[in-house]
Length: 279
Ligand code: HPA
View 1 (tube, protein in one colour):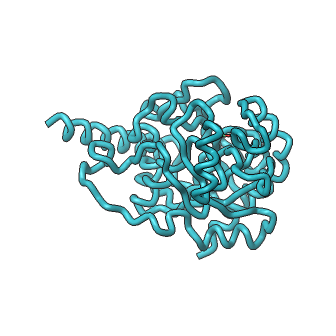
View 2 (view 1 turned 90 degrees about the vertical axis):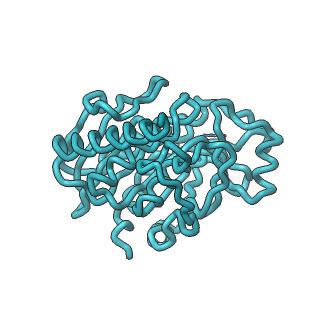
């Protein structure tokens, strides 16, 4: 039936992408970093011996529909750790399906990647996590992002009831917060977007225990966990979320705050990569 065909087609897309990653980049890196809004420049200077690859050359890698960074992969080393930096993440609000959003993560896992750092920009639901705060995700509330394990979105077509306890690897997170003690932990609420939340939605998330609101990360985290990979996710609070302290978020503020606190974000990203070795 059509659903089965969709599933088989997607598995082919994944395998094709995995094969082209192996062909162009060689052996899978130890850690892959999915760069989100405001994070691409934070990774500049992180790695030695960088090789760059244009994502336009990878047929099945979905490309962002909003202008921004040159979508590229950067492969290099941080001390003994081989790292791949992935630019150009795509979002559900661009009209991409769950399967498309997580295809790069699934392909990288098929290639052999076992550790993922997922980065994002987020709004803070409270003034106690002011702009510039870096927060490792301890858990999430999915308030409207697609789940990549539904029906034809799974590579096998098999429905699995995946356990999401410890979705965000506690050991890896503890290793990060032990070395970077200013990194907070908290709960990320994922919204569909692309409009920012209403003040009422932000108040709801805060009441439910959410510290951050954003529009990404959750689909990739679920797909990675379901496929047996480890996930560390970090939000940079780039603004107070709508209505918090009278805030009215805008994209320029998000980018400006990310740049302003860029130096610390770079250091924390370095800690995060090195913390991947913690078992
Ligand atoms: N809401 C949702 N996503 C975001 C925000 C926000 O306030 N800031 C950065 N990404």
